Length: 339
Image (cartoon, rainbow, N blue to C red):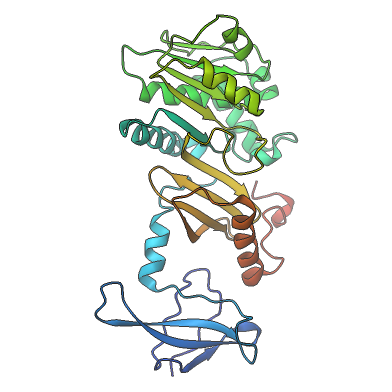
């Protein structure tokens, strides 16, 4: 009989049992028994042993973990590019992920895209302000956007979205192409000094007054929000141009993606309770569990179709509670020290 292992080890979910098929191989926490089962591997030749967690005496009511070491490794590879919280906002990692995701889609001929990620590190606390928020504002006001710190700090999200849009234009535009970055936040960004000559930054209202389709080869709409805005920008984009909807604060579909279903979700980092939903084109969607130490673990491959937000959040939340109970609250440690 193999040694019993801790039931929800966050280092490894694959409980390797050496017992015979159906044999008892150990007792986990909470009275759960680990039962072995043998199945053919993916090549159809050798067999591999895996453990299933069952509540003793209550068949079918317990949780089930059926992930081999190989399967766990494959799953973790799906989140190898997930940005480190929150160093990635400062060291170029998030910039590379964003631009490479857009470029991969663009190279495949995709012209309608949607991206969604926290434009500001620790976005949840932006209204209160944290040291991380302040550090990011200082970076933007300095060499990145070269404008006044006080204004950037006051309108941090608005400036941050333009900053990320500019990163896309620097990579995805050909030398002869042009781009326009649109917004509806009402913040005058004429003070920006790092906007290249082939890129315009203006409000959607001003762009609509120009009449007819926009002349630019790429249109980036930051924080579009209402469905009407999405549709308006889509109409303003000339045929053959690329359009990217970026970081909508909310959408009226109450789902993961916006109302224009023909768009390709090329990068998504959506925070949910106890974790994240992640996708970087062309990979599949992944449900991610955030662990008490701030690290992450890929929990489930959600496939190529856009997953249902509520169901995915429930999967991650339930797993967190099974493993850690109430002790997986990112706000608890040091009353916000992790932020």
